[in-house]
Image (tube, rainbow, N blue to C red; front, side, top):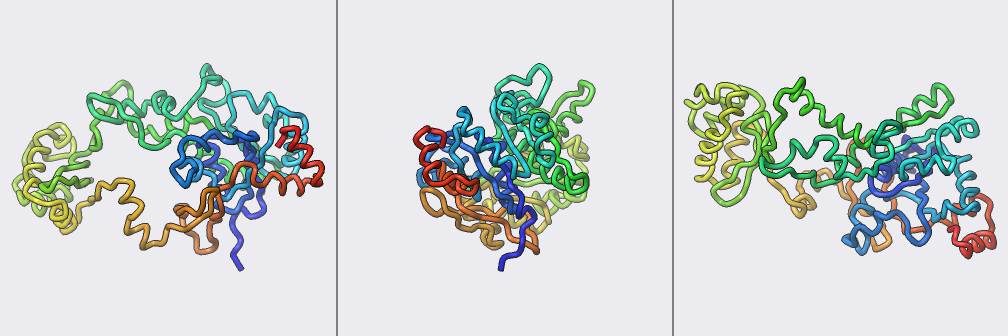
Length: 395
């Protein structure tokens, strides 16, 4: 018998597409919530067609939509609105990241729903949040990376570079997820649902707080330094004599002394005034980089790593996606499990944070409308009525 999960018995209705809201609700499903994903008949979440990399399914979609039920529903039709009203009457949480104002126009704002469903938690995810001059602007992940200043500190001196994943969407999805958990705890005390307003801009701006404070009151912001740390040195990638790259990082003066003595084998560098503090090492990073590369050019990557390990200096391999799939630590901790998808079984990474009291839910990625008939039957629709909704294009 499986142990109960934290959100068993919680029902989430989600009007979602792309990444931020689906990532939020997938994590709620991981914890046991029943997530009913409402999709447009025949089309579905447009992220379903971003690519066909995973047995014909989109990489973004299989990542953010496992363990959900897909209900095809054309919300522009009155019959669909009736189905949605029945679902909300039984739901604990409504999540939506539709175009700005779209949910409110359908009568799905918190104010419109709260009187009828006082325990319902409503989470609105948008690019820029309610109110303000940006409220109605379209907001895609890369656009928010730009607005939040992320691109100004990421890349090389010559070229700004975006994050290689959907970092603004992920940030918003995480704050929506934790906000809903907090709202469920609060409801347990007050008996009332609440509204959560999550902005992609505000989520990523929070993650930008270190460079923000570094540039406090007009001071020079962190420069773009490629894969190297902008304000700590040496901290970044260094080429080795066998054509590979090792990532390493120093955090304090004790490590700097060990690095000089045991890795560079030049203890006199420890007290070189050019490198006597982190600020000085950053200011003279070009000279220090040349010394490090000269030393590493006579060593293989594994020899460099062996020296770094012996000196207890933090280091890492520079892995690509193939190496991450095969990462020995993930394998040793048995972090991969198999889940089903419309195209066949696929590996899925267990969610971070292992509990000794329960196992995360790891169910299939749904096909479009896969659960429509079953959900409508639960609501009291018989086969004939469901068939009629199908003929009318409601589902």
